[in-house]
Amino acid sequence: MPQIHAVFVFFLLTLGCSVVATAFVGCGRPTSPTPAPTAEVGPLPEKPLTKSEVKKLVEKIGRATLSGDMETVIDLTYPALIDLIGGRKKMVAVMERITEDMKANGLTFSTYDVGEPGNFQSEGGNTFTVVPTKLEITSADTRIVTDNFLLGISPNGGRSWTFIEGGGLKDKKAVEKVLPKLPVGLRLPPVNEPKLLPK
Image 1 (spheres, helix red, strand yellow):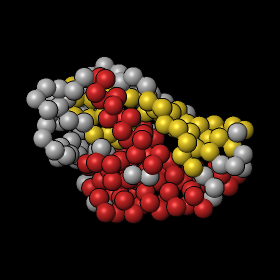
Image 2 (cartoon, one colour):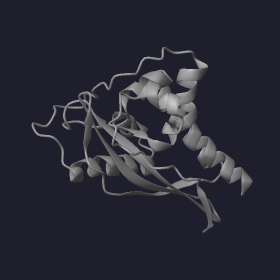
Image 3 (tube, helix red, strand yellow):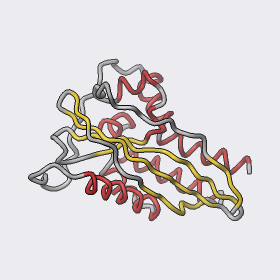
């Protein structure tokens, strides 16, 4: 049980808190806020996406996570975070290493549930929404469940979206550096500790 918990926490921190913290605090990066670049994946739709369509994007992330399709996960990841990690190739390598470590410890992604996106809110030319998620990882005798969220960011009025995992946004200083200015009324949900349950 302790070994499973340690590997899972390592997975969360590597993709979330520690990635952001290392990129900014450990490497001494500039403190100016990072703008929200556009991920160019095909032509943009003519109209802003609806909440239902944004939810489908997060469900696509969920399916890619379960199947190990890290390229698709990165396609929908907030580009500034990819740059901070060292680029797309490095991020793929990091995620693949974590996945291999999980497999070596008998851990498997089993379910990825997506809730309804929150209201769209705008600030400084960017549009934001919070999408609840629930990820379950299983071993031979344990289920590890975490309630989390993805923060969606659109730099073009909702026509395209990328996302950043909520676990990496607990550090206020890191948030100020990795994200554009957030709307005053946007409330980021708390990220709960993973629950270890019998299978």
